[in-house]
Length: 330
Image 1 (cartoon, rainbow, N blue to C red):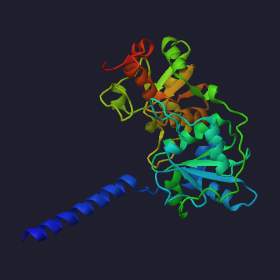
Image 2: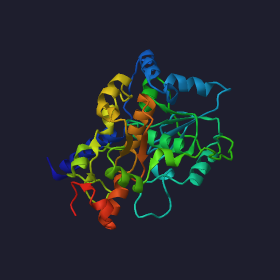
Image 3: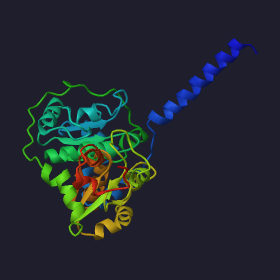
Image 4: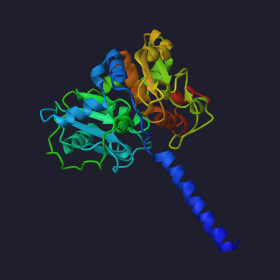
Protein backbone atom coordinates (compact mmCIF):
# COMPACT_ATOMS: atom_id res chain seq x y z
CA UNK A 1 0.00 0.00 0.00
CA UNK A 2 1.58 3.31 -1.04
CA UNK A 3 1.94 6.36 1.17
CA UNK A 4 -0.85 8.32 -0.56
CA UNK A 5 -3.39 5.56 0.08
CA UNK A 6 -2.28 5.21 3.70
CA UNK A 7 -2.52 8.97 4.15
CA UNK A 8 -6.01 9.06 2.62
CA UNK A 9 -7.23 6.19 4.82
CA UNK A 10 -5.79 7.89 7.90
CA UNK A 11 -7.72 11.08 7.10
CA UNK A 12 -10.97 9.15 6.53
CA UNK A 13 -10.60 7.24 9.81
CA UNK A 14 -9.85 10.47 11.67
CA UNK A 15 -12.94 12.13 10.21
CA UNK A 16 -15.16 9.19 11.10
CA UNK A 17 -13.84 9.06 14.66
CA UNK A 18 -14.19 12.83 14.96
CA UNK A 19 -17.80 12.67 13.78
CA UNK A 20 -18.81 10.07 16.34
CA UNK A 21 -17.00 11.90 19.14
CA UNK A 22 -18.83 15.09 18.14
CA UNK A 23 -22.14 13.25 18.04
CA UNK A 24 -21.60 11.76 21.47
CA UNK A 25 -20.74 15.16 22.93
CA UNK A 26 -23.36 17.36 21.25
CA UNK A 27 -26.24 15.15 20.10
CA UNK A 28 -29.53 15.27 21.96
CA UNK A 29 -30.13 11.86 23.52
CA UNK A 30 -33.72 10.83 22.80
CA UNK A 31 -35.58 9.79 25.95
CA UNK A 32 -38.94 8.05 25.84
CA UNK A 33 -40.89 8.54 29.07
CA UNK A 34 -44.15 6.99 30.18
CA UNK A 35 -46.56 9.93 30.15
CA UNK A 36 -48.89 8.79 32.93
CA UNK A 37 -46.01 7.79 35.19
CA UNK A 38 -44.30 11.14 34.65
CA UNK A 39 -47.49 13.04 35.43
CA UNK A 40 -48.14 10.95 38.55
CA UNK A 41 -44.59 11.68 39.75
CA UNK A 42 -45.02 15.41 39.16
CA UNK A 43 -48.35 15.44 41.01
CA UNK A 44 -46.53 14.20 44.12
CA UNK A 45 -44.08 17.11 44.14
CA UNK A 46 -44.62 19.95 46.60
CA UNK A 47 -45.13 22.38 43.71
CA UNK A 48 -46.36 20.46 40.66
CA UNK A 49 -47.23 23.78 39.05
CA UNK A 50 -43.48 24.39 38.60
CA UNK A 51 -43.16 21.42 36.24
CA UNK A 52 -44.57 20.62 32.83
CA UNK A 53 -44.56 17.58 30.53
CA UNK A 54 -44.02 17.68 26.76
CA UNK A 55 -47.68 16.82 26.21
CA UNK A 56 -48.83 19.72 28.41
CA UNK A 57 -46.49 22.17 26.71
CA UNK A 58 -47.62 21.05 23.27
CA UNK A 59 -51.26 21.50 24.25
CA UNK A 60 -50.60 24.98 25.65
CA UNK A 61 -48.79 26.04 22.49
CA UNK A 62 -51.74 24.91 20.36
CA UNK A 63 -54.33 26.65 22.56
CA UNK A 64 -54.81 30.20 21.28
CA UNK A 65 -56.16 31.23 24.69
CA UNK A 66 -52.86 30.33 26.38
CA UNK A 67 -49.98 32.79 26.52
CA UNK A 68 -46.85 30.65 26.82
CA UNK A 69 -43.21 31.40 25.99
CA UNK A 70 -40.74 28.52 25.95
CA UNK A 71 -37.04 29.34 26.35
CA UNK A 72 -34.35 26.78 25.67
CA UNK A 73 -30.91 27.17 27.21
CA UNK A 74 -28.90 25.58 24.42
CA UNK A 75 -25.57 26.15 22.69
CA UNK A 76 -27.19 25.87 19.25
CA UNK A 77 -30.34 27.49 17.88
CA UNK A 78 -30.70 24.91 15.11
CA UNK A 79 -32.65 22.24 17.03
CA UNK A 80 -35.22 23.62 19.42
CA UNK A 81 -38.85 23.26 20.40
CA UNK A 82 -40.83 24.99 17.62
CA UNK A 83 -41.72 28.55 18.55
CA UNK A 84 -39.29 28.69 21.44
CA UNK A 85 -36.49 31.18 21.93
CA UNK A 86 -32.97 29.97 22.65
CA UNK A 87 -30.36 31.51 24.93
CA UNK A 88 -26.92 30.55 26.13
CA UNK A 89 -25.19 31.61 29.34
CA UNK A 90 -23.67 34.91 28.10
CA UNK A 91 -27.18 36.05 27.14
CA UNK A 92 -28.42 36.16 30.72
CA UNK A 93 -25.20 36.71 32.66
CA UNK A 94 -23.52 39.94 33.68
CA UNK A 95 -22.13 41.61 30.56
CA UNK A 96 -20.15 44.37 32.27
CA UNK A 97 -16.55 43.87 33.27
CA UNK A 98 -16.20 42.06 36.60
CA UNK A 99 -13.13 40.35 38.05
CA UNK A 100 -14.94 37.00 37.85
CA UNK A 101 -17.64 35.77 35.48
CA UNK A 102 -20.82 33.75 35.63
CA UNK A 103 -23.01 35.98 37.80
CA UNK A 104 -26.60 36.79 36.89
CA UNK A 105 -27.41 39.70 34.62
CA UNK A 106 -28.84 42.74 36.41
CA UNK A 107 -32.56 43.32 36.70
CA UNK A 108 -32.68 45.84 33.84
CA UNK A 109 -31.01 43.44 31.39
CA UNK A 110 -33.42 40.65 32.30
CA UNK A 111 -36.39 42.98 31.87
CA UNK A 112 -35.17 43.89 28.37
CA UNK A 113 -34.66 40.22 27.52
CA UNK A 114 -38.22 39.32 28.47
CA UNK A 115 -39.56 42.40 26.71
CA UNK A 116 -37.81 41.30 23.50
CA UNK A 117 -39.45 37.89 23.85
CA UNK A 118 -42.90 39.43 24.22
CA UNK A 119 -43.36 38.30 27.84
CA UNK A 120 -46.09 39.85 29.97
CA UNK A 121 -46.55 39.68 33.73
CA UNK A 122 -49.02 36.77 33.44
CA UNK A 123 -47.21 34.86 30.64
CA UNK A 124 -46.35 31.24 31.36
CA UNK A 125 -42.60 30.78 30.83
CA UNK A 126 -41.26 27.26 30.27
CA UNK A 127 -37.51 26.70 30.48
CA UNK A 128 -35.76 23.66 29.06
CA UNK A 129 -32.30 22.36 28.19
CA UNK A 130 -30.82 19.27 26.55
CA UNK A 131 -29.08 16.23 28.07
CA UNK A 132 -28.69 17.96 31.44
CA UNK A 133 -31.27 20.32 32.93
CA UNK A 134 -29.11 22.45 35.25
CA UNK A 135 -28.90 25.32 32.74
CA UNK A 136 -32.69 25.39 32.48
CA UNK A 137 -33.05 25.64 36.25
CA UNK A 138 -30.42 28.39 36.40
CA UNK A 139 -32.50 30.52 34.05
CA UNK A 140 -35.64 29.56 35.96
CA UNK A 141 -33.99 30.66 39.21
CA UNK A 142 -33.12 34.03 37.68
CA UNK A 143 -36.71 34.45 36.52
CA UNK A 144 -37.89 33.69 40.05
CA UNK A 145 -35.42 36.26 41.39
CA UNK A 146 -36.99 38.66 38.93
CA UNK A 147 -40.32 37.84 40.55
CA UNK A 148 -42.06 36.22 37.59
CA UNK A 149 -44.88 34.09 38.95
CA UNK A 150 -45.59 31.34 36.40
CA UNK A 151 -42.28 29.70 35.47
CA UNK A 152 -42.10 25.96 34.77
CA UNK A 153 -39.39 23.44 34.01
CA UNK A 154 -39.91 21.00 31.15
CA UNK A 155 -39.13 17.77 32.99
CA UNK A 156 -36.52 15.96 30.91
CA UNK A 157 -36.08 18.86 28.52
CA UNK A 158 -35.59 18.63 24.79
CA UNK A 159 -34.71 14.94 25.14
CA UNK A 160 -38.19 13.92 26.26
CA UNK A 161 -39.81 16.35 23.82
CA UNK A 162 -38.19 14.46 20.95
CA UNK A 163 -38.87 11.15 22.70
CA UNK A 164 -42.57 12.02 22.72
CA UNK A 165 -42.47 12.18 18.92
CA UNK A 166 -42.61 15.95 18.58
CA UNK A 167 -40.68 17.83 15.92
CA UNK A 168 -37.89 20.34 16.42
CA UNK A 169 -37.10 23.47 14.45
CA UNK A 170 -34.78 26.45 14.40
CA UNK A 171 -35.33 28.76 17.36
CA UNK A 172 -37.67 31.74 17.19
CA UNK A 173 -36.16 35.17 16.61
CA UNK A 174 -36.75 38.45 18.41
CA UNK A 175 -39.71 40.05 16.67
CA UNK A 176 -41.61 36.81 16.14
CA UNK A 177 -43.80 37.92 19.05
CA UNK A 178 -44.86 41.52 19.63
CA UNK A 179 -42.41 43.15 22.03
CA UNK A 180 -43.63 44.22 25.46
CA UNK A 181 -42.42 46.57 28.17
CA UNK A 182 -41.77 44.02 30.90
CA UNK A 183 -41.25 45.38 34.41
CA UNK A 184 -40.18 43.18 37.33
CA UNK A 185 -42.56 44.43 39.99
CA UNK A 186 -41.77 41.64 42.47
CA UNK A 187 -37.96 41.57 42.35
CA UNK A 188 -36.89 39.04 44.98
CA UNK A 189 -33.08 38.83 44.95
CA UNK A 190 -32.51 39.08 48.68
CA UNK A 191 -34.65 36.05 49.50
CA UNK A 192 -33.28 33.72 46.80
CA UNK A 193 -29.64 34.77 46.35
CA UNK A 194 -26.91 34.53 48.99
CA UNK A 195 -24.06 37.02 48.62
CA UNK A 196 -20.46 36.63 49.78
CA UNK A 197 -21.06 38.35 53.09
CA UNK A 198 -23.92 36.01 53.97
CA UNK A 199 -21.89 32.93 53.00
CA UNK A 200 -19.06 34.03 55.31
CA UNK A 201 -21.68 34.48 58.03
CA UNK A 202 -23.01 30.99 57.27
CA UNK A 203 -19.56 29.44 57.77
CA UNK A 204 -19.30 31.13 61.16
CA UNK A 205 -22.89 30.38 62.20
CA UNK A 206 -23.49 26.66 61.75
CA UNK A 207 -26.43 26.78 64.16
CA UNK A 208 -28.57 28.55 61.57
CA UNK A 209 -26.97 27.75 58.20
CA UNK A 210 -26.22 24.64 56.17
CA UNK A 211 -23.78 24.94 53.25
CA UNK A 212 -24.21 22.46 50.41
CA UNK A 213 -21.55 21.91 47.72
CA UNK A 214 -23.17 20.58 44.54
CA UNK A 215 -20.05 20.28 42.35
CA UNK A 216 -18.27 17.10 41.27
CA UNK A 217 -16.38 15.09 43.86
CA UNK A 218 -13.01 16.04 42.34
CA UNK A 219 -13.82 19.73 42.71
CA UNK A 220 -15.02 19.23 46.27
CA UNK A 221 -11.83 17.43 47.31
CA UNK A 222 -9.62 20.04 45.65
CA UNK A 223 -8.06 17.62 43.16
CA UNK A 224 -9.67 19.46 40.22
CA UNK A 225 -10.08 23.15 39.50
CA UNK A 226 -12.46 24.14 36.72
CA UNK A 227 -11.60 26.91 34.28
CA UNK A 228 -12.66 30.27 35.67
CA UNK A 229 -11.88 29.48 39.30
CA UNK A 230 -8.85 31.07 40.93
CA UNK A 231 -7.77 28.04 42.91
CA UNK A 232 -8.95 24.70 44.31
CA UNK A 233 -10.89 23.89 47.44
CA UNK A 234 -14.28 24.14 49.10
CA UNK A 235 -16.03 26.41 51.53
CA UNK A 236 -15.25 25.34 55.08
CA UNK A 237 -17.81 23.06 56.71
CA UNK A 238 -19.93 22.52 53.61
CA UNK A 239 -21.42 19.10 52.94
CA UNK A 240 -21.36 17.60 49.46
CA UNK A 241 -24.09 16.11 47.28
CA UNK A 242 -23.45 16.37 43.56
CA UNK A 243 -26.40 17.98 41.80
CA UNK A 244 -26.70 15.17 39.22
CA UNK A 245 -27.63 12.61 41.88
CA UNK A 246 -31.15 14.04 41.78
CA UNK A 247 -31.59 13.02 38.13
CA UNK A 248 -33.05 9.68 37.04
CA UNK A 249 -31.51 7.55 34.29
CA UNK A 250 -34.03 8.85 31.74
CA UNK A 251 -32.93 12.45 32.35
CA UNK A 252 -36.05 13.49 34.27
CA UNK A 253 -36.11 14.37 37.95
CA UNK A 254 -36.31 11.53 40.46
CA UNK A 255 -39.47 10.95 42.49
CA UNK A 256 -40.16 12.94 45.64
CA UNK A 257 -39.53 9.88 47.82
CA UNK A 258 -36.14 9.29 46.17
CA UNK A 259 -35.20 12.94 46.56
CA UNK A 260 -36.20 13.03 50.21
CA UNK A 261 -33.98 10.02 50.82
CA UNK A 262 -31.07 11.62 48.95
CA UNK A 263 -31.32 14.87 50.92
CA UNK A 264 -32.40 13.36 54.24
CA UNK A 265 -29.49 14.80 56.23
CA UNK A 266 -29.96 18.20 54.64
CA UNK A 267 -33.66 18.33 55.38
CA UNK A 268 -33.44 17.22 58.99
CA UNK A 269 -31.05 20.07 59.75
CA UNK A 270 -34.00 22.50 59.57
CA UNK A 271 -31.55 25.30 58.76
CA UNK A 272 -31.21 27.94 56.07
CA UNK A 273 -29.57 26.09 53.19
CA UNK A 274 -27.11 27.81 50.85
CA UNK A 275 -26.24 25.84 47.72
CA UNK A 276 -23.12 26.57 45.68
CA UNK A 277 -21.12 25.18 42.77
CA UNK A 278 -18.67 26.76 40.31
CA UNK A 279 -20.87 29.61 39.11
CA UNK A 280 -24.36 29.08 40.52
CA UNK A 281 -25.65 26.86 37.68
CA UNK A 282 -25.51 23.35 39.13
CA UNK A 283 -26.48 24.73 42.54
CA UNK A 284 -29.58 26.32 40.96
CA UNK A 285 -30.65 22.79 40.01
CA UNK A 286 -30.34 21.69 43.64
CA UNK A 287 -32.16 24.84 44.76
CA UNK A 288 -35.00 23.92 42.40
CA UNK A 289 -35.12 20.31 43.62
CA UNK A 290 -35.23 21.30 47.29
CA UNK A 291 -37.77 24.10 46.94
CA UNK A 292 -40.09 22.99 44.15
CA UNK A 293 -39.96 19.18 44.24
CA UNK A 294 -39.46 18.56 47.97
CA UNK A 295 -40.95 21.78 49.31
CA UNK A 296 -38.18 22.95 51.65
CA UNK A 297 -38.55 26.73 51.60
CA UNK A 298 -35.41 27.92 53.38
CA UNK A 299 -32.97 27.64 50.46
CA UNK A 300 -30.78 30.16 48.69
CA UNK A 301 -28.53 29.83 45.67
CA UNK A 302 -25.08 31.41 45.97
CA UNK A 303 -24.83 33.21 42.64
CA UNK A 304 -21.09 33.98 42.82
CA UNK A 305 -20.32 30.46 44.06
CA UNK A 306 -16.78 29.07 43.91
CA UNK A 307 -15.58 31.55 41.28
CA UNK A 308 -16.34 34.51 43.53
CA UNK A 309 -15.19 32.72 46.69
CA UNK A 310 -11.88 31.61 45.16
CA UNK A 311 -11.29 35.10 43.73
CA UNK A 312 -11.56 36.60 47.18
CA UNK A 313 -9.46 33.84 48.73
CA UNK A 314 -6.65 33.67 46.17
CA UNK A 315 -6.59 36.98 44.30
CA UNK A 316 -7.70 39.42 46.99
CA UNK A 317 -6.35 37.24 49.79
CA UNK A 318 -9.24 38.28 51.98
CA UNK A 319 -8.51 36.62 55.33
CA UNK A 320 -12.23 36.29 56.14
CA UNK A 321 -12.55 34.08 53.05
CA UNK A 322 -9.12 32.41 52.87
CA UNK A 323 -9.26 31.14 56.45
CA UNK A 324 -12.59 29.49 55.69
CA UNK A 325 -11.32 27.62 52.61
CA UNK A 326 -10.71 23.87 52.88
CA UNK A 327 -8.55 21.75 50.56
CA UNK A 328 -6.98 24.92 49.13
CA UNK A 329 -3.42 25.48 47.98
CA UNK A 330 -2.34 28.97 48.97
